Image 1 (cartoon, rainbow, N blue to C red):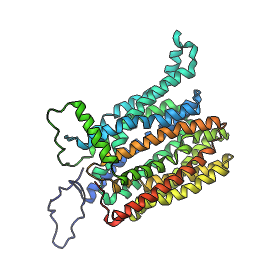
Image 2 (tube, one colour):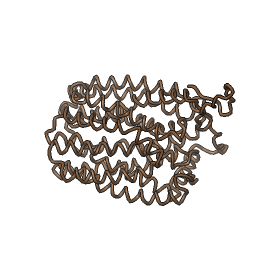
Image 3 (tube, rainbow, N blue to C red):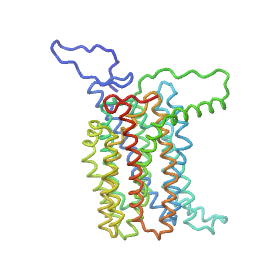
Image 4 (spheres, rainbow, N blue to C red):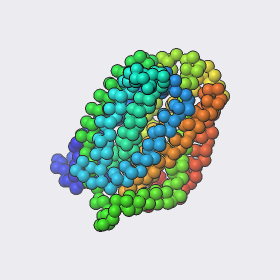
Length: 466
């Protein structure tokens, strides 16, 4: 990594303009150093994005193929990840903010879960095979292949989510520590572009064959993620951080844990401004969840060919790819909070149209692409909102509090959506109407947050309250 110490005097020819330096914390980058930083971060992002884009979709198909109901899908795919997040994320983020070591305060927590992700992917690849072997044992013979395969799918999916949630909880904090804030929106635009390239490659070339080639897809992603994400962690260096607060001598672990928990919740949720921030971001994020959770099932209920469905997603990601960097620039120019409000209004119109008119493969294709493009635009434009609004000293802690509220919202919403669909004769068009209602509530919360943000100085003079 090519960085420049904060107070280095660079040798230059008289009359030659000084090279531009970008700084964040104790890290300083020349243009070359910035390019190297972005290269390794985006390399890790590509491996991370392939995992995030591909694995849930394939697991969703396997759950359906082995007889899981909409309610079970909602619990395993929608509620399990946030439930794990509620337990792990506050602890990990609190520890990470206060950790000091030669590898930094983020990289150790990113590296540790990687072998478990790889192990879980290998286990998912062979879950149906393990289920078939389990049915040969006398105690399990009566349960059949479907139930036994679901046991292993659920087990390895749980391991996968434990490891994934651990790494994901600090990925944004890691980026916040090493990327200059002035470039954050544009970095996330590139970040989004690489994520979309990964999605296009997967859905255009592989998703239509996922039901027959899932073993090789799981194994391939395991190898790519294990190598790619590890390499990123080894190549990117963190800066130096202020000393962590001293611990009281003689205090027990139990008292220390309780004291840390009290500090965490008091700091994170003590101010109404941050409570409105958490509410607005959670409602905005979950507004797209009903459609995302059951999009494959909607397609199959309309007898849509999976290859055509995959092409619709590839088209969605292609459009989003073109928009990614300009949207990142707009977020830097106009502020992510303003972009959040604009895109929520647009999504409410798109989801209402889908709920009213998506009744056959072609109208659903239109609704799906529009949903994906607007939801993706929202994700791109708001990717840097935490970095712009949260206090930098305890960034991971406050960002994890946002993740905690998002986890609670997702954990409650997913089985509720599945329950409604089970009792509504699997009318998946209702997922768009649910998204419409949630987006309106999110819009109201965001307008309240915007008013408070302006009172604190707005885009030009804002300082995060502490």
